[in-house]
Structure formats: C-alpha cells, structure tokens
Length: 320
Image (spheres, rainbow, N blue to C red):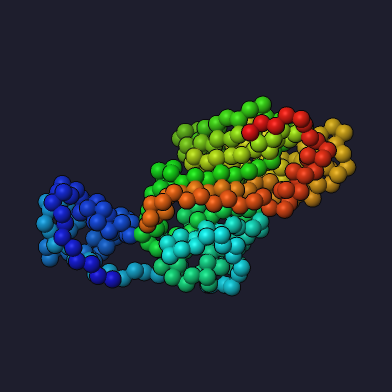
C-alpha cells in the first residue's frame, strides 16, 4: 500500500505518529510507529523517529506491506450471523464453540469459521475479534472486517463505550441490584482461573447487575459490563456469594435447596455449563457513527431452566 499526504497546519506540535494516527484512522498508532521505526515512512524525504514533532506542511510518503495477521486455517463451520455489512459482523455464538484457537483447541473455533466466511479477515488482527466469550457462554459478539473498523471499535471498547448486557441465573436470593467493583487478576495458585486480588496484582473490574426475577433460592439477573476482564461476571458473582448455576470453575458444588423437587434436582444435575448468555450488544458503527443494538434470545437450556424454576420455585413478586 502507498499513501502520500501533507501534514495540515492545525496538527503543528503533534508527534509524527500522533499526527498520522489522526490522518489515517484505518491504521493503529502502534502499526504506524512500527512503520516509522522500520523506515517505511519518509517525512520530507527523511526517516523520522515516532516522537519527532511536526510543524505542518511536511510531505509524508508511506510505502509498506500489510502483513498477514492470521496463520490459522479456514474451516467451513456454520455461524449464526445476525448482522453483517462491509465493516462489521455480529454473531450469536452457541454454547461449546471456542472463540480463538489456543491450547487444546487448535481448530474448529469461531476464528477458523470466520476465515472461511470472510477470507480478508486474515489481514485483520485476531481476524477482527475484539472481545471474547468463554466456550460455554453463549451470545453476541462483534467482529471487525476492516482495519478502520478494528481501530475504531478497539478504542471504543477501551473507552467503555460499547454496551454489553448479559442474562444469568445464580444461586441464592439477591435483595436488590448493585455494582461490584474490585481488582481482578490471575489466581495465585490455579493459573487457569482468575480471582479478586489486590490493586498491585490486578486490574479494575466493574460489573453492574439488576434483578429480573426472584425465585426461592435462585435469582435471574441482568448484568452489564463496564470493564471486560477475563471471566469477570463469573468471578464477581462468586465473590458476592451468588455463583452462576453450572459454573464448575467458580461455583463450587451444586447447591440444592431444602426439599428441592425432583424435577429441579434433575435439571440442575443435567445443566453442564455456566448459565450465562450475552443477550444484548450496542455500539456506535465505526463508519456511519450510528448507534446500533442487537438482542439474542436465551438459548433453550437456560429457558428450560427458567421454566422449571417458574413451575416449582416461583415467588409472587417480580422486580425489573
């Protein structure tokens, strides 16, 4: 690819990498810095350091190759696509699908399916995946299809401007909604798990939750993420002693209410994953700047669980 441009006077005083990031939003600042360091960019015919400041009027020539970002294989795997245009793709991920290849899951992931659906994603970091869901969490994910969309939405995510809402069913009866604010980091002994830790060893995590419906010994919640730490909702709800039903990593042993009906016991025993679903996603479109929202209905297993709770553990009061 090749670009030739003039630095406008209003950017005088900016670092060259900052100025280029404003003029070329389709490329991340880190990518532009790499090109500056690698002598892929000249300013008035010379190689500049990223920290060098512009005065306005400089001629910039960029000649660089967009390196292939993804080396994984494309696989023909069905995707439940609920929205797609030239810039973004919104997917309703099923339970059991791994989002990104990793240890123990080198193939048959959502990334492999995406590369088959849109081969150009091999040129986008992480094939356009800017946020993830755990293997056994269902629901909505947005994928970016261009570098411009990727740069824009990653920044929106960092600025906490993408709305992500979940539904979950937890043990115990919560009295009211609330907000959980802690530091979350890697568990000190079990490295595959996350935990609430001190400020020195973790990053801030903020989770808001509201009650959809109370049952005897259970609560159906709507959960809103302000930050997006690994396993955040699962860790936070376990932290306040209301773990998610079916969460083997953070929920501990199955909790059976006293004199629980046989139908409920059977349903809980057969519920083999965390009852967590990404039900609503909202964002500003990276090109049109229009606010867009999507919703995904609860999967059948969670709906069946709610039906059982309604039939055998129902309470008269409902709080929204």
